[in-house]
Length: 288
Image (cartoon, rainbow, N blue to C red; front, side, top):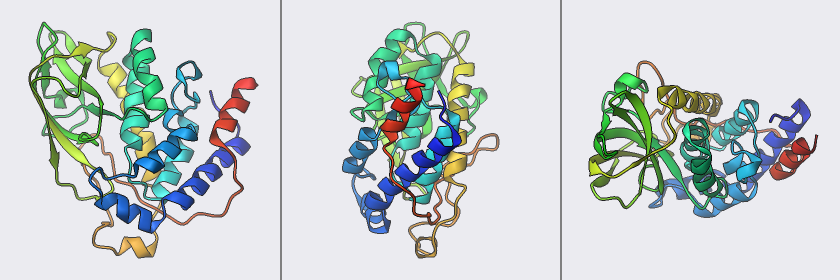
């Protein structure tokens, strides 16, 4: 589902207003310095406005928006320098469940992602940092258990829905790992951009269940959504007071693979805009 140009402007304004109220420079600094790296109260507000479920179909509790709406929202999160697992959970994880998951998978996973009760992440690449099928370094055994390591996992320490891209005997598959599974270890790693948290995941005979039956084509669909969001998020400059802060680098980027890059957020000042509820726009579009 998509909404018209005027409604997308209202969507952008609603997100800008919300973030201007709860994600100003002092809020960003506090979140960056917290243990989790993001503000859970703001996360709940994003969920209440429907933003965490913007790519989730209404059948599963979301708004059912598409790429154009994602662009508008991602640009405002970049403008605010939002430190939160929005790209990881609301975009990449949701898009992968949409692309690869069965109806049962969607019923199990999407409602929690949409209402913010769950935070998702996707472990894709190995140490090479190439977001391609050749870069996958986790292997799935015949019984579905996983071995190997995944690097550059965004917001991996706070995720409770963990999806892992792994090599199988006949290509690549998508697997779900319980966050408390045996043989699963997560290690936080240092990052250049303090608005993003990264982890390394290690798997040693870790039990897992496959999500759907699709392979790399589903992963590529999800990555395409993440590229849209990260490109719009990075497409605006930071205001001077943040740009020259040594803790907020000019050109951040947790991963710089040769084939696919997920740049860190950048920000820019916003024009005042009228308020409009995000959820109202989704309801209005569905009625048409």
